Length: 192
Ligand code: HEC
Image 1 (cartoon, rainbow, N blue to C red):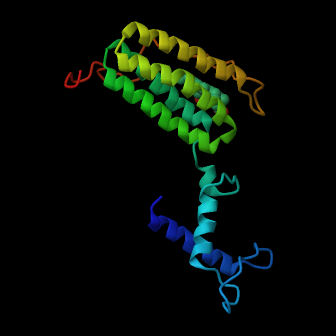
Image 2: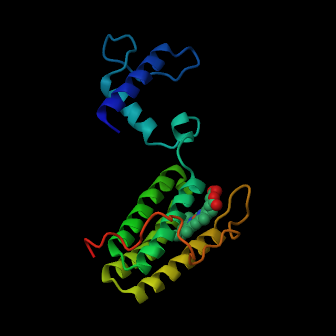
Image 3: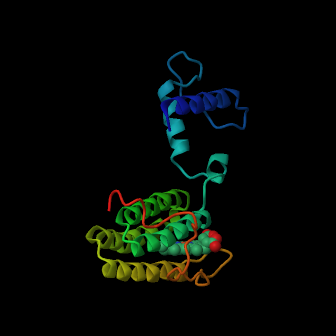
């Protein structure tokens, strides 16, 4: 977040605190003789704390993607990855794994309870895929891909929620068709 955005939010928080009624949170001590005002650094500390802590009462947190939304992108990228590998388009394959790590990072923040398993998956299986991609070995890539499939499904089986005792009804397999009909997985041939 830019300093400007932080300042804007900080200003909003300061105004909100200044206007807080009797039920509002007690304000930090102000500068000497300031009559309860708050300093810029107090405001910044408060804004940083608000923006870095998951708080489900904040609209900001409620509009973030949860794991279900993240999984849809994860699945698309994992699917793309297969076709990139099958086409020996190793830069595309490397890109897809990179994007999987990026979208996964969203869920690690918004669904912190899922973070340990997501990180374990990345450490075990995405790293294995990275290695296979770096060595540009199609056989090793297919092995790493199948192992990752087992990892996806292992996590689904091990995960639960208040609505579902297990997500073992989500079963990933090797894809048979690309989600993207308008992408040539062999690429443009400039970097291969
Ligand atoms: C942290 C453990 C975990 C890992 C690792 C994981 N998933 Fe998931 N996945 C889940 C959970 C939990 C859900 C249910 C999400 C929800 O709605 O809360 C899910 C849902 C899904 C769905 C259903 C999405 C939908 O809305 O139809 C797909 C598809 C999916 N995952 C694919 C994958 C793929 C592909 C991988 C591996 C590359 C993977 N997942 C790895 C936990 C995991």
